Length: 113
Length: 109
Image (cartoon, rainbow over all chains, first blue to last red; front, side):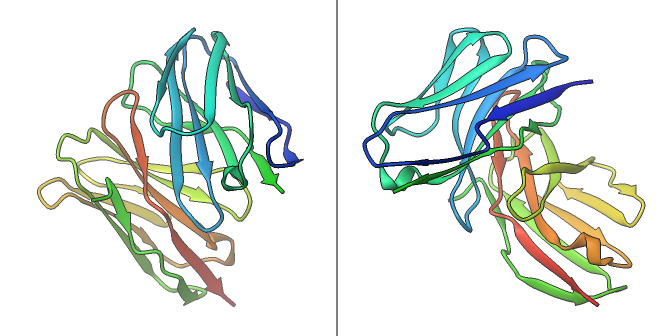
């Protein structure tokens, strides 16, 4: 069966500090991978998605970036965090064939102070 | 215009009640449709896919109306454990999923 991991689970960072969130998927190959952010009381906002190693599409211009160094690894980064980066960050995967569902990791709760 | 729109609620219903949520989507090329459930401070989890002919899973019934571009979820005989936020999700292509902001449901004893 497939599993998706995210870490860390929670993070408190000062404004201006860097960020690195990691997501890994097990039990499947060549998945589509996604990063979402959910601000308090709001819906999920798609940040990045990837259809393969090194292939990243950005949905929203901002100070975040994503990388996919391996087939089942997806990393979300920032060089300098802003207060507005606080939120619940969710990684998800889906099958390449489309027409299927997304499966979410447990998320990382980020608070920027 | 948002890709997916939902009534945020909250819906507060007594145990045993029937409750319905609606969701509209803007892109007629949307291919697949889903309802997800999200508990407080947790990740969304798939509740059910929505098929053109409508589908049922126990107390949950999902309907799709392509002509009017809306999706519905009906919950019968509500349980306390049904309290959560229900997210409507639309897939445009194999890579693009759009989420509604969610409808909050609280089932009251």
